Image 1 (cartoon, rainbow, N blue to C red):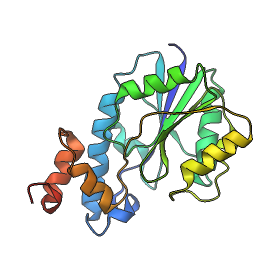
Image 2: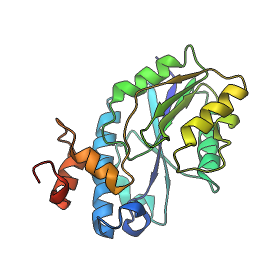
Image 3: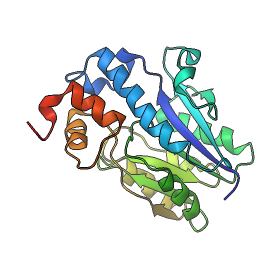
Image 4: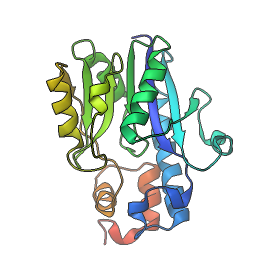
Length: 223
């Protein structure tokens, strides 16, 4: 499969700006460490994608991307996110990348440490038969959106960050006549409850799990 592009959306690991809903559990420096651990897991998995898939990191935040280059695979192309709502920024990124003649574009977040590179390959393959692929998350949002070309209707969501995002996206796409396929459901890590659920999973031993287990041993199954 050729000419695919994967966009990763991420804030830079500036502690006081990231994962603020975890502030009751983790300090600024711990949240920074958590983001770097998730980067290590996610980036390490995604570089297994075929070389024909170009990977972009679209970043935002007050930091300087040059300070974080040492954490990024050389293969990554870095670009700053545009201004605007999350929907506007995602649409702008997909439109920008699509202009480079990629046949399929997928966009994911940077807080899904259980991701496998095969899930991205599967999403690209689904686009042979569907206009849009969405990877649901248990909180009612989605961790992945993929399409052959930019579809503005997919991003006409009035409120981001709540339990209706996936349903609203599906509704908008269906009303506009586009076909949709759902991919694997994956958890992201946004809230204390997400942390507890992630630490309770069997057979997870990645950098994120080890970091959280060290910081929050009270949440581990042994306790």
